[in-house]
Amino acid sequence: MSEGLNLKSMVAGHIANIPRSGIRDFFELVQGREGVISLGVGEPDFCTPWHIREAAIYSLEKGQTSYTSNLGAPRLRSAISDYVEDFFGVRYNDADEILVTVGVSEAIDLALRALINPGEEVIYHEPCYVSYSPSIAMALGKAVPVKTYVEDGFSLRAEEIEKVITPQSKVLMLNFPTNPTGATLDPVEMEKIAELSIKHNLIVITDEIYSELRYTEEKHQSIVALPGMRERTILLHGFSKAFAMTGFRLGYACGPAVLIDAMMKIHQYGALCAPITSQAAAVEALENGAPAVEEMRRSYDQRRQFMVRKLNELGLPTCDPGGGFYVFPDIRGTGMTSSEFAKGLLEAENVAAVPGDAFGEAGAGFLRCCYATSFDELREAMTRMGRFLKSIGVE
Ligand code: PLP
Image (cartoon, rainbow, N blue to C red; front, side):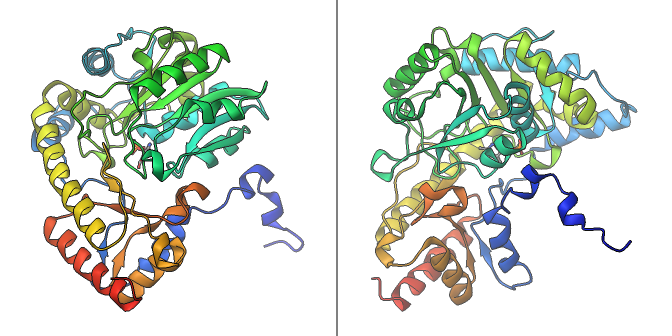
């Protein structure tokens, strides 16, 4: 290395300032340990259904190894258009209102970069998925978190959003069901939030990645379907969670053509297109995947009920989440911080769960447990957690 070359100082300021993910920090502690039961990673424990994997294999067998259109393969865009209309009740034109992306992760980044001028504000509810605040920073926007509270089941109230709106507010990000809490959005509040977005001319980015994984009576509803919202909403969805396809790295954005075109401009020079093999599998998932999704949903539901019951019995108050595959027990009664509890549990009992404040300050005093792991492991994890609680005097 040449003398005097300070590489740290070469890193762009707004990137250097992004904190490391609290989840990553925690998983460094987990690595190398034997016999750990992980309630940590937010990933389905199912392998991708066989007929979907088969579609990927056939695609390769047919020699489909090229780029696709930047927007995504026409057949997939057409399948997305039909699926989204059926599931969300909103029709998008497959020619210019749908963009296939490398996971919802890329779609979040594209949507923010396409919309935000430096310093413009993005409002989002916390605790939230770990990528939101860094993605806003990378887009040079200003992150404006709105706290949600356990008393409301971590759902969002419109009045809390209204309090933080300024002339610089441009985007509102929503994610229901929510990672890490599993919260769903009350329909009355959803209507108020839609009215607020229209009144203050906000663009809404709605991350619908857990939409199929709902456990309440009512059918999932997205804000995009409310009057006046389609024209100001970018709907993000993907295949990772409901179809158990995390490794395929595939998602999509639906929205007004002008916004999709702006996102496409970034995508075509960055990713160019999503992988063709994954796109072939995704067509099969959308057209014939519903029975497998329902089977997985039922299985998550049984595990969700078990976890909520067990954690409450152990003395950790836990809301009944309406969606996703996470529970978010309240550990404040132990007198420990989230990190102390998570580290203590890992060291004493080899159970890994993520400290709630990894998802923003509003998650302090909570723990995220992903229940997408076998019943045997969940039972054992709860036995170990019970032992840990006893050892610290909570019974
Ligand atoms: N959005 C939320 C709320 C998530 O929880 C996740 C993954 O955990 C993602 C987006 C990223 O999904 P993908 O695998 O499609 O990039």
